[in-house]
Image (cartoon, rainbow, N blue to C red; front, top):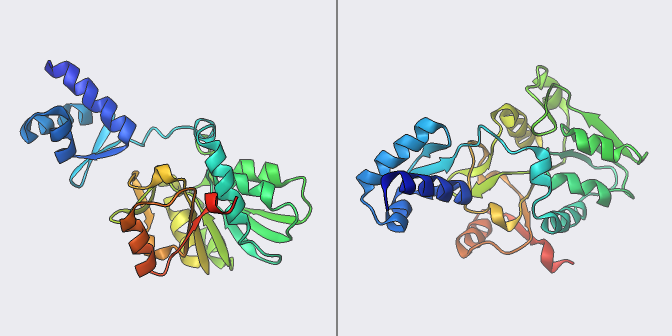
Length: 254
């Protein structure tokens, strides 16, 4: 395989797998680690991938749009959203994070009387027909890519809300890197919500495990519930038991 062809294939491999170690690339492409390092440097200079500890990751600075992400894995997202909505009770003050899975929750909250704080524009629009849903927008600068309000100037206002349940989204989750996402602009909002909430629910389909993105907004042990569609690998199951995290498998509830 010629060098230019190999570099293109390495780029495709990283973009498909999101994050990979250098050792994995050495094994897959059957070249030395020094060769891989030189190839990786060329891809980093192109801006397509970034170096991370022990390997490389797809560069999420060019975040896929909300509409693009919304069309993927819709059945799993709806299943997870239904399971998450079961934890919402009348009188709750909840936070709904910006995400294509959390957005699906609105359809399952139609009969509940709750106050919802959110930074997601689509969620606000979808909740509009239901008088029982008292919606509070975080406001801030509007990010068209994620259809969410980011970079809040008045972060103290968000900190003043007493949120008893937060339903959070993520681009990827690993034990070492924690709960991650692709938009640096939303980082402070997510961190603040996690710290302010009595209970934190993480909504992720099974494809998100062992993937991580640009920013870590909380460690795994800061999450109280992980709601997903299929059981993760054994090391995640052991971690959740050890840290008293409730693992909820939505496919078992349907």
